[in-house]
Length: 237
Image (tube, rainbow, N blue to C red; front, side):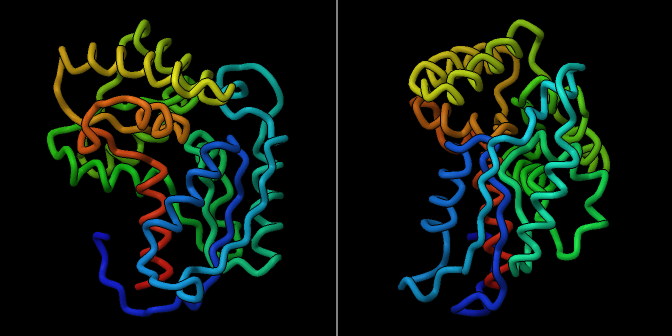
C-alpha cells in the first residue's frame, strides 16, 4: 500500500459497475480483497456491484461500428449510486472515454482508472511507459490526454504489435487466457527490444494475460491494481 491507513473499517461503500468484461471484474474484486488492509471479514469494505456485460462494446463504437455505450454506462452508474454507493468505480479503461463526458453529473465521486494508472506508471517508470490498450482506447486518446497534463511520456506500439495486443485481449475475453498470455509476451518482448520500459496494462484483460507469462511483475503497471489501490485509499484513509 502506498497510502496511510487512518481507519480500520471503511465508513463509505464502494459501488462498482462491472461486467466489462466479466473476468476482469472478478479479478478486480479479488484484488480489493487481497489488497485491503483488513485482518477480518468485518474490516473489509462494503461493496455494491452491478455486472452488466450487455453494455455495448466500447471499442467497437469508437472504431466506427455498433451502438454507443454511453447511455447504458451512465444509467448503470446512477443505478449503483442510488443503491447507496458513496464512491464509484468501473474496471474498464475504454469506458472512461464516455464517462468523462458525464463524470460531473454523477451524484458521488468516481475513482478514475486512467488517472490512477498513469499516476502509478509515473512511479514505476518515470522515464515513460508503453501503452498497451484496446484499439478504441488508443484511438480515443484518453490516456495521452491525462499523461500530457502531467508531462509524462507514453509510447505506442506499431500497428502490427497493436494488432497482437488486441488479439490477446480478445483471447482473454473468450476464456483463452493462456493463449492470450503467450501472444502478449511475444509482443512485449518485441517492444522491449526497442525500448525497455514498463508496459501499462491499459485494458483490464491485459493484467490477466500478463499474469500467464513469466515476465517480471515490476515491469507491468496493471490498471486493475491501480484502480483497486486508489479505491482502497479512498475507503481507508
